[in-house]
Length: 328
Image (cartoon, rainbow, N blue to C red):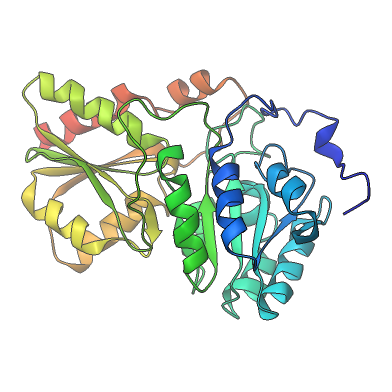
């Protein structure tokens, strides 16, 4: 860290929001918890503002390490720091922590089971910067690594509880986040968050939507719409993607007529496949339809345009649920 406490993203726009007026729900939670846990350190890659780690940088300068635009190096350094008893948090965009640095994550974090926390922002189609910045396969990549825990809170209402769970867990974690300017309108702050857990937000017996990340609020809206039409649809927030809550999946697989999964990720290797694998392993035969990015790369454009073009809207969840109900 240089004496001027400056870095590239203090001067330039990354093409995503670096507005200091945007609430920093994750960053503030990390700061509060780090004041209690002196072993937490942070590593940056010139993206401290858009990854909300600039507050930690300014509050705890002796525990913040700027590596520069070098995620692979940051991951290797973090692994060494973990061996010395620190709890390193490495911050970058999701695509750079996973696709760009996959071998380092595998060999220096997952294989030795280093106590490193990888915090990735801009998941899926939450950026207008196109293929180079869209992490559409990061969950599939990280789920495939032995020893790696994969978590995705539904939104800022879960961020503090998520950070506490990550700190308390001994081992490698990939935490998938997005910046948000407000809490989802149906949620209040949630203290429920545990590795391997999930959260029932709405009950129902006709169908169930298993959703993760930003798709949770959309699943809730879809469920409310269908309730008005006399269809009772449960919504489960699957915030722990690995390990996944197999008991909850089995419960609703047996209880409801069909299942829909909704994720801001390709439908290959993510939440949908994880749920399908659990159902198959427990010999539960039930209709299942996936909502997510199909087997394709997306493009640049506004978030609203991308969500509509690639079928990640509330209406897509509603249509998928109705389709699988009729089919079954």
